[in-house]
Length: 458
Image 1: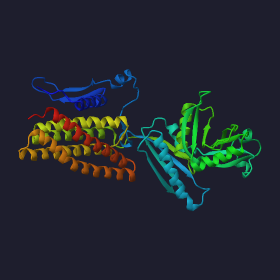
Image 2: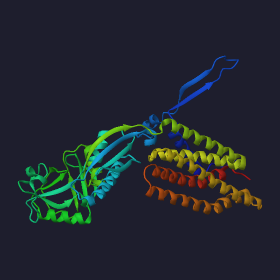
Image 3: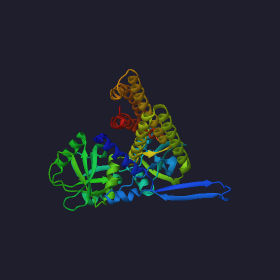
């Protein structure tokens, strides 16, 4: 009598079904050319699309409206190229290169906060002029991207004739500062560099979006001193040399938290949050040019790569079935579930797919098969020593585990080094390889073992 499926098997089947649901396309193209035969007399060309599964509609019916499409990199989808001029004329020559490099790092952080991964950001120098070249994959709202990466977002705080503050040149006073603070506004020593975190919240009285600031320990002490000496007086804040408001300090605030309000829309508040969290640009930037760029490889290369991966998958399945019989069939089923899970994770995270990333995925499939081969060979050894299949199954997994663990840890270390020190497509390769290695461990140890325990009989 067949045993009931275990709980683990039910979970695996459910995960495989969800992976299949996410990865089956809504339309399946069929392109075939059948040569003429004596029976037909004519060449038959089939060029149509068969309806697949409307995954988006199914998910929307249960309240999930997020898109789970693959995100493609510049080499597969194209994007936007922006060339920025770095204004370094006011800096000493010895500091210009460091300032441009710092601006580059800030731009990379802002683009990542913006939700775009694997941007290409590089600097160039021509005739003592510094430029920053930014290439962003898959961006449709170019104006918003330009605003995000090119805005300085410099935050400063100003007080009304506070003692101990130095009077600055009128040209350095923010716009609207005199309206809020009178004729002699003075700059405090608190700035955006003292910021620890910015979070968008909503005012409980007005319902308007505001940005809540949390300062570092040093910034909290500065803010505490400023509020202590300005009780009953206005304290203004300026962004990019424009003062938006100057609320009256009612009490001493030692907690190091403040609120920025300014009749923002939700999108404006979110963008300000991103800019403040990513940091202020150390230099001002101006846009020299912006234009759309086409995919360097395009959909044709993507289809060829996926076709090569499918052929490799089929060859692996054939090899495993020929070498290990029923065990190979189980390994092939586990490998199919592994592929569905990895592709689903790529959609859920989401991971930006480049051709290098696809190579990392295909490489991880080979790693997943290696784990099954180690397990099966250990099982064969135990069977040759006269052990029962159940005992061989247990010993095969337990004794192969250390080898599988060590080899996968080595692969993960390599992936981590590539991701930390690499840029662009190298990081994409490292990320897809790391995800594939982690899922392959689950596939080899959990999926294969559960299926064998359920169906592998004496």
